[in-house]
Every structure is written in structure tokens, then in C-alpha cells.
Amino acid sequence: MSAFKTLMKMPQTKLASKCIALEELLQRYYQFEEVHYDLQSKYQILQEKFEKLSQQHIQLMQSIQNDKDSISQKSYKKLDSYLNCAEKIELCAIEDLETQKLIEELKQQNQKMKEEVSQSKQEYQRLQSIFEQTQTELLRSASVKTASDSKYNSLIDDKSNDSIQSYKNEIARLNKIVTSLRVELCQYKTREYDEEWMKAQLIKYQKQSQLSSNNNKSFDILDYVDN
Image (tube, rainbow, N blue to C red):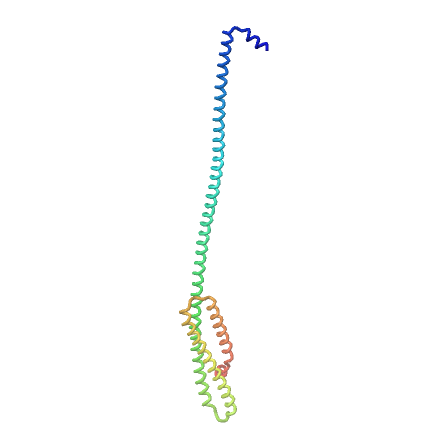
């Protein structure tokens, strides 16, 4: 109220100048307020842009990390594939070596069987020669016996006949073995290498050879003829 009274007492010129100054001050205030709002609006826009850029930056970093993970995973799978291929190549090489070794062993067994067949043929020929010689000697020995030894000669003839029959049976058995071996040898030339088949044939042949060897021990007639 006192300020109003002071203004009323003030001269009009001075009051007018103060009003003008106040009006200018208000005008500046309005301008400042307008600039303030404008700056605040620009700040808000910049803030939104910053948040958007920050979000894009986060998404970009996530995308880069995902790409890194994907590339790392693909690289790991590719490396693992290379390692598996290398391991398979190494296993194939080892299998090839083992197959080659098996083929060599089968070839050696085949050669061994051929040699044993040849030895069996030679043994058969030797036994056949011995049988023929023994038969000749028995016939010659029987022809020179005297009539006074008829009973003794009859016993000898029985033994000789038994021995001859045994020789005939043995030769027939050996003929079957040789024929069987010849057939198996011919079949084996066209057969693929089969380890189990060769082992079975070898065991069969060894049993037959052992049986033949055991039967040969029973031929005591040779000792009798020599005496």
C-alpha cells in the first residue's frame, strides 16, 4: 500500500519511464521463457535420440555377440568335422594295412597248404611203392614155402592176406584224401580268401594226416617180411 502511495506521488514522467522499463523487463522475461521452453524441447528431443541410440547400441552389441557365438560355434563344428575326417582317414589307412597283412597271411597259408598237398602226394606214392614191393615179396615168399610147413604157411598166409587187405584199405583211403585235396585245391583257386574256411580245411587235413600216421604204425607186416 505504501509502495502504491509512493508511485502515486511520483511524477508522471518518472512513472512513465518506470512503466516502460518494467514493460521491457517483462518482454525480456517472455523472451527468456520462450527460449527456455525451446531449449527444453530440444533437450527432450536430444534425450529421446540418445535413448534410441543407446537402445540401438545395446541391440548392436547383442547382435555382434550373437554373431561371435555363431561364428565360434560354426568354427568349432568345422574344426570338429576336420578332426573327424582326419581320424576317419587314419582309421581307413590302418584298416588297409590290416587287410593287406591278412591277405599276405592267407597267401602264406595257401602256399603252405599247397606244400602239404604235395607232401601228401609224395607220401601216397611212397606208401604205394612199399605196398607193391611188399605184395611182390609176399607172393614170392609164399611160392617158395614147402608143403611140410603148410599149417605154418597157412597162418602166415592169413596174416599176409590181412596185411594186404589193410594196405589196400589204406591206399583206398589215401586215394580218397588225395582226390579230396585235389578238389579242394581246385575250388580254393577260385574261392576268395576266407580265413575261417582255410583254418577249417587246415584242421581237417591235419586230423586226416594224424589219422594216417596212426594207421601206418599198425603195418607190422614190413617187419615180418624183413625178418
